[in-house]
Each structure stands twice: as C-alpha cells, then as structure tokens.
Image 1 (cartoon, rainbow, N blue to C red):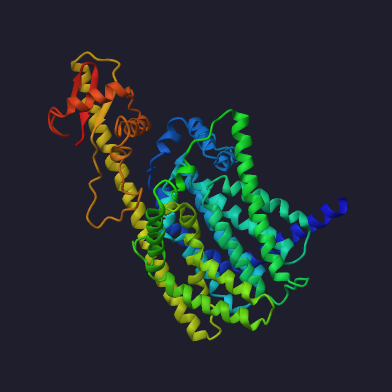
Image 2 (image 1 turned 30 degrees about the vertical axis):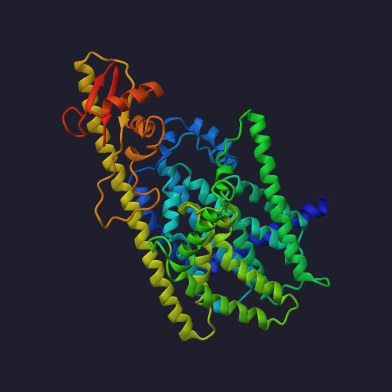
Length: 522
C-alpha cells in the first residue's frame, strides 16, 4: 500500500511538472486569456450590481445555504465553507470567479496537450479555445448569479479535472488511485450544479477522441476501446450514484427535507410527450440553427461539421480497431449539448447550457487545426471574429444588468421615501408592505436582454401570493430599507384595495389602508 501511494504521489508530481512546463511554454496564451478576461469580466469587478437570489445571500446567507441543501447542491455549500466565504461579498465572489474560469479554460488546453500529444496543428487551438470558452454569452446568465458565480466556475474546473484524473489511469495505465480524485471531483461538481453532468460527458468524449489519435496511447486487450467506453460509462454512473447518496446523507444529517425543485425539471410525464418533444426540438433549433442569436451563434453547426470532418479523418488514419466507437463518440459529442434537454423534456435555461458553451468553444478552436497553414489561419480569423462578437454580446448583457440594478435602486429609494412620509403622516410605526402589480426596467430598445438579465426585482415572482413583494422587500433590505412582509390575507386585501388606486408614480399610488401600506406598481 505504501508503494502504491508513493507511485501515485510521483505520478501526481509528474502531472504538476508537465503542467508547469506547459504554462511556461504557453505564456502568450496566458497573456491573451488574461486580456480577454479583463475585457469581458472587468465590468463584474468595477461595476456593482447583483442578481435575483443574491439579495438572500446578502441578507441571510445561512438560510440560502440551507435551501441549497434541500435541492442537493451541497457542493456550493462546501465550496463556500472551504474558501471561508461565510459572508457574501459580491466583489470577492466575482474576482475569484474570474480566476477560476480563466484557470479552467487554460487547464483544458493542458488536458488537450496530454490527450492528443505533441501536435503542431494545435498551436492555434490553444489560443482560441480559452477565449471562445470564457466569452460565451450563456455564461453571462450564469455568472450574473453573483451569489454562486465563483462556486460554479470552480465546479467547472473540477469537472474537467475529474476527466483528466480518470484519463491518467484509463489511457496511460497509471495508478488506479487516480479514480478516487476523479470521483470526488465529479460528486463535488454535480453537487454544485446538476448541469455539470452534461459537461462531464462532453469533456469525457473529447478525451476519448483525442486519446484515440495519440500514437503513444496503446491499450491492451482484445477490445481495448470498447472496454475504455465501458469504464467511462461505469465511472460516470458511479459518480452519479455517489452524488445522489451524498445528497441524501447530508440532508439526513442536517434533518432537511428535499424539495421538488430537481424533480420538476423532468417534464415528460407532467406536460405530456408532445409538449416535451416540442421543448427538445426548440432547444435543438437554438443550438444548431442559432435561434436567439444573442446566446446561440449560427456558426456552431458549420464549426461542428468542419471540426468533425477533421477529427473523423484523423481517427480513420490511425487504422485502429475501435473506429466505429470513435465515430459514435464524435456523433455523441455533437449531440451532447442537447442531452439534458432530452432527459428532462424541457428547455435548458441559458445558465445551464454549460455543455453547449464547452462544445462550441472546442469546435471553434478545432477548425484551426488544419495542416495547411493558409486554411488554419483563415479559420483562426473566423474564430476570432465569432469570439469578438460573443464578447460584445456578453459585455452588453453585463451592462444591461448594471443599468437594471441601478434603476431598481433608484426606484426603491423613491418608493421608500414616500412610504416613510405616509407612515409618519398616519402615525404608523410597524406595518406590512404590499406591492401590487409589477414594474419593468426602462431599458433602451437596443439593450441586450436574457432570461434573467434585464429583469427587475420589481417584476420578479409576480405569481406568488403577494406578487413581487417578497423579492422587492428582500432587495430593499440590502439597501437598508426595513419593510415587513404581509400575510396572505393582508396581501389579498391589498389587491382588492389597489384596484381603485392610481399607478406609480402618481399621487395616491402609495396609500395606508387599515394598517397596511399598499403600493400599486401597475
């Protein structure tokens, strides 16, 4: 056992040494990636805003952590505690997110070098993949959730690291102890965000395709590549089972019941086969046809075809027995952005399109690997143009988020000032507040919007028993404006009374009725 651990430690140090050498020989990639991160995410450092749900982290982070445990996102809780983030500070979360995201993009470059081996055709790939990956507009929706931005970026790194660790045992026959960190990282990543299961599959497929092309990878046995696939499927299933068990054990330990949040993501039975199928086909149209061009670029399919042809040709030239499996893996990689949609029968939210972001970046970088220099440079220019377009969309989305936040802050200040005045005029000290209706941010026609970005606190959760009141009061609490939530009866009474009131900001749009402060927003 001692020798086993010693060998594993030596192999671990060997990987660290190779990574250090790779970083030293690719300083240009690090420089370009650093500039890209500053351009794309500098707004998250120098502007101050936060998203829906982040108000809960600012007001009562422990309650938020408990709620994550109810939906089996214990990985988020563990990461916060590991990095001593006991108090939510948006700046710290955003800064660490940028570091983790940048490192994960560069680490994947290193993984490509390990899996593929030395290949000069990939010299441009190492530049394009990181900037294409970090500039994906879907990530703007994900990292707009400041309360978990670092934790999600960290989990993405864990997901890539899980595949790397397993590949050391699988392809290079190093110590089987590599399986342990692989499983730990898988469970940690899946326990941070369930959509990382899709990302793991995509990264694993890439590792298989590249290792297949590597002459130094020599697997033993009668059907070595089939056995390789079986092992990958087995470790993925074991990781999923361990994740489910870990979630149950943690909830049992803390005495917390699970909610239906995750179960509600599976719609095949609840909405019917046809409706679910329409959702899946609609998601496919977004991914492969570029519907909703702000987030899904039309270049995905052309890049997929070109990169796929290159991969197919290189795999065929290897003259190995597992070529049918190689072709299958390539097809699955092209389809992998839709896996979670197929499983759930629903649109994946933009923030959950992690596999799409990764696969598109891989294909976009992959088209630069032509052996003919002129073709490689042409494709590199195309990839840079697409990446710049993505980057512009991302910065515009972050700017929309900043404008929306500041409008919400100004509106909250104006409303609270009037509430205090009316309360003082009526001699009221303690009173519930009810906001009736909703009010959207006043954005320009050209402002980029997403599913969450551009949505005001004053229009969120409008279907709850008290409308947007809960969200608004939570937001106001972060600004130091104390308000009391109404009971369902008080909210229903306010809805009735507001029918005869004018709409904000007209005089009379804020009234005190029977000890309840009512504000009509629409």
